[in-house]
Image (cartoon, rainbow, N blue to C red; front, side, top):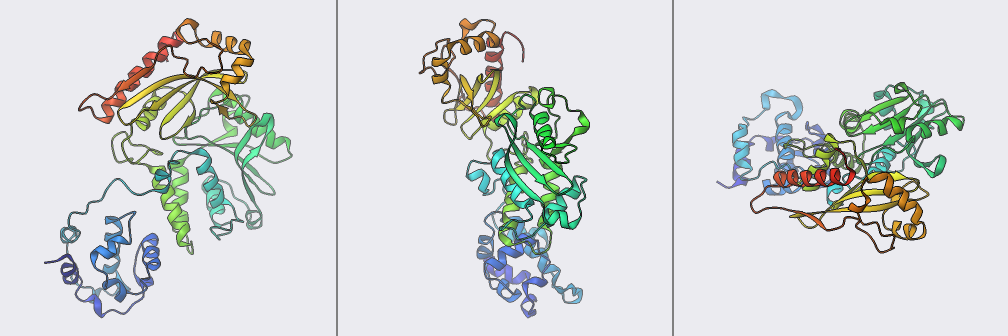
Length: 439
């Protein structure tokens, strides 16, 4: 029996129903996918073969298909007309060899921006913006978010609120996000991979307050709701910082937005993609939020090193990750872990220069060192007890400060987790050797 014949056998009585798709109890994203495909009625839905139906859900496959089947069970709330549906075993047979996969097509993953603080902050700000020309939901999303974090504003203030990103502050710094209303101002610092900077939270909150805005606290959004370090807090007390996390605060809010009435289909899809990306492959061992769907040695290393040590991550891409070792003035030493193909990790000791916008640039430090050798020597002495273990040249061309290339290569038959574990041991061992102390 073909799959199409099996589908007809499972739902023999439904062809008598003449109802619109709106009467089916379906998940919003599933219903919108069908509507986008021109499926407006139950009769049109039943004309699809199982392959055609599955092709309408390239992101979700089995789960979406089963949601359609469940919706058919609940048609019109008429139990007397409910046909004898097949068991879940039959449904699985119907789908053949198709399996629910932990991997999905995800825009953030495919574009290599799954862990970009800037991208995620801008997207959250756009959803929160009551004047957004994209979601056309006014202050609905903003009101839901503020109520969830314990902030209540009157409707007129919500409608007139302003949501901005990369807001200029003191000393060339920029706040990640600022929500401004007539009676209240909420500054946000978003951390996914980057570490804290000196007096960062203190400076942001004091800057907002110095502008005459009522800002009793600053909001610190991270993957795990961890506390900011003392260097970032400065003079701030714990009561002046509200800790938020993507899994516990952002995901529930996004879920609430998805279920709100009248959300455009394209906005629903973006929210779903964002939720999937934040959650990451959490079902697999070692999986966590903001991880890639495929098992990747860099993601494993980041998760392992972040849990074990408080490292100041400054940049992370699909090919390398960098964290600061020591900063003196505008110059710093940083350690880079770079993936040279799927089976090799190379370690680098590099220098970076802080630019006017507060971001570190690792490409232009060589020129600065050549022109300011004294600054480099001071950084060198402050970082390493034995400077002879690194390359101390002040030539512009010096990039990697390790005296020799350091690789960690995958052994034959070695899995990604085992490979990452060996890389971690190599990284920690090399760092402790250079710094002269345990991490």
